[in-house]
Amino acid sequence: MHSLSQHRRNPRWEDALERELNALRVWLARISKRSPKGCDVSYLEGNHEVRWSTYVQGRAPVMRNIGLDWDRYVGLQDLDIKRVKPGLKVPCGQGQKVAIYHGHEGRLGGSKFAGGVAYKFATEHGCNIHIGHTHKMGLQVLKVGGRQVYGAEGGYGGDIRKAAFDFINGRKPPWTLGFTYYDSEQNHSPFPNFVRV
Image (cartoon, rainbow, N blue to C red; front, side, top):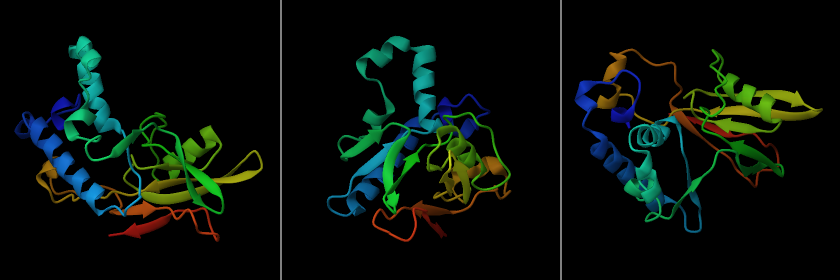
């Protein structure tokens, strides 16, 4: 949702909102189609989707009363994808759970260490935390109230060679390309499985 950003915008993307929403719809349809039968697919709003709400609230607040929301335009309901709230706890192994956040919610700043922002979340919430906002991949373990918990950052699953990344001018961002998954049935560890690509 580049065209709704309050940050410096690339003029070539000013009128691309419909194209961006259509691209997201296609990507979500692929995920929905490829998900195993009986698998729940959930969508957690991040800072880019918040741009929509901020824009509507700031420029046309009465429009939100008629359901003018981004999830309708990308067809979450049609794809049977459930929009979930930050802090959703999911099984992660050893009978434990991990709370899923995007990572922009806490305004906890950054960290030069992968897992550092998630570590701050885990300290604040006192439980296992997973975030993706930093686009880094890492894990930091800490003790809270005598219990061992962790903060995990899941990496970045996009393709930085696409035109949307023209703004980086060929520089490589400090992100880790890859993804993370949890196996709720693993008995040896509650930690995530990291896959670099």
